[in-house]
Length: 494
Image (tube, rainbow, N blue to C red):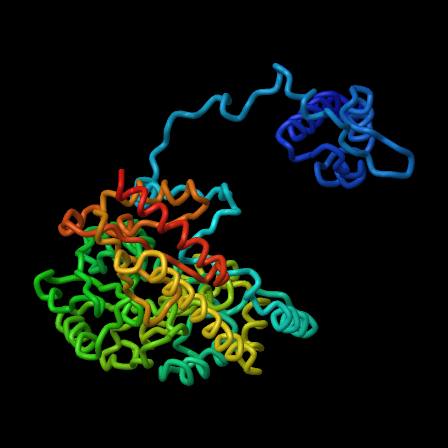
């Protein structure tokens, strides 16, 4: 006797219950086609007769609808029907005893980084920093490039160089030489999935638990988190209108590395003068420290001339230069790059291979085409004009509706400004955020960008907002600032 004959009833019941559960949780939505009996049998290693028997029972119970010559579909009301007392919600399932995470895992969990959820009130005017307007994306040029590279697909589909496509690295090397005056070879470039992966790689390869790491304060909190996850002890460098106050480096003592944003300090917008750049590099040489230079939005310069990158000034091989395409194309592409001292290329390539092998090759090759034929440079020039027009609209609206009540910092470059409101204390930021949101405007306070453990966090300062403008059109910006001014007056009178 065939042993499978005795197992079939149990297998049929298990499959029946699984399909019902998938209907309950929405995996099989109402009206959706069910897999064919042949396909499901092959996928599960069952006989087609077994799957047919299950489908017949589901149809008899009213969970699916069948028609000759057409796919079976989930019946209307199936989800409600299967949510019977026999269905066990995931939250109610028995749990195993808690098992400890690794030390890195525990530190990451303790950071409290919530998974982003869909935004409510999408119709609000949002002065958020980070997102770009979908209408600004060079869709036609991008689609043409993608089609071109897909027509050239290799007959051999295999894992690629962890450093990234040689075509992209070569094109990027030429671009960085033209746009940033950065002399490097294609061999020094590693393509990463956005600048955040670059920071994670730096933290993994440079930082041991307990190592001191110098960061700017206020600063880019996701960079802080990347180093904290690997056990770094952060030391904080103050910020003024010119960026990092490098005079304070000596008082911080030895450090394993320093993370800085010299071209456009995040968030206050300072542009690090050449004297401070050299002072930082001299400190790094004396301290035997690495310097991570985040050049996150250097394409957007409105009132400053290009300054030599730290990497261009580095004569001792201590600077890692990080850049991204998230601010010129889209954060969703997940494309960034690192320019490394030659001695670091192999270790970082190995770490990249361990992490994710390499970035997706199709988008790399498409971007290489845009860089090679000049489409990317034309797009950046167009975006620079558009973003400057948005910034001008923001500055004019702030002057018109708030006047001397608003002081703007960091307008020389970038995609955001900091707006200080001296009539309100920093403690009023939550009240102002709430008052603005009641008027359909989202604004973002400065306070969360100060590290909670920094000694100067509690120093008195006025209310501050980080106001991005890359997502909004000029007329919307003007309307949003008018509503913000109303919110400011409400909080002042409270």
